[in-house]
Length: 309
Ligand SMILES: Cc1cc2nc3c(=O)[nH]c(=O)nc-3n(C[C@H](O)[C@H](O)[C@H](O)COP(=O)(O)O)c2cc1C
Image 1: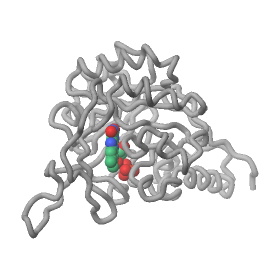
Image 2: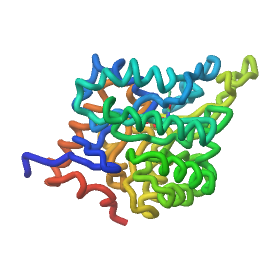
Image 3: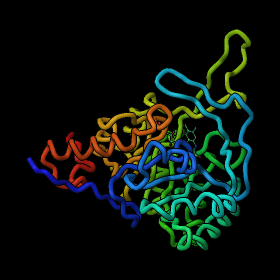
Image 4: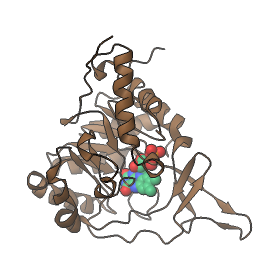
């Protein structure tokens, strides 16, 4: 049995101490979790989705628990990029963990302006890369509309590619017939990596009032309920593209994370589980290390996509 193992990963040129990141929208602006998690131990921190201007999001109720998961329709509530730069990013200077910014917009122009602005401050504020959300199901304009169409995916990703040299991770929606086609379009358009999945669309009805339980009617399903869907999509995309894949969806324990890595994810993002157990990311990092040691695997990269068929 080995006593030392290598957990390092590289995604889109971003060097990670380990493959465990936080999923956008489930870890706030990072600071909120600092009492529970040593942020220096994380592979990377992906912040709550940001738009050019502040957004109030959807009216409440906008979160509801479902069997083995939750539905949310937050609607990208956020402080806007200028407040992010002035008030949120300086906090991370004392940590050595890469910070990745998840970006959204209603129009291509908005994505481009946001990308340019973050590019301008990236060195000074330590922006390691961008995760482009073309998959948000809870907004009226933009959002998922890009990620459900291969042409639109190509158009938005190639436009963003032209205005930045920052590492680009494109986040895909599972609300499609064939995710491989969308993944291919993003790769051809210049994505450095893909992350998947965002939430699956769903709905809950209150039988007394006969109204939907979410004010937005529909919401995005996340948590353990989506894990088999996410895994299946990671595996399909792994067989289709040459760029690295970040697995997301329903992971709550180390075994879940290992399944994603074996199915082809070079890194993973932990989302909804943070709400239940704020220390889950650290527990998963420690669990992966233990698994590698026990299975005599010196380097985690050997495990990526090692599924036997
Ligand atoms: C409350 C909430 C807010 C989210 N906000 C964002 C967001 O701003 N941008 C984004 O790309 N994904 C967002 N997501 C999606 C998650 O990052 C993740 O892709 C999804 O929840 C699946 O992972 P999970 O099952 O581990 O939560 C959000 C999810 C939840 C539950």
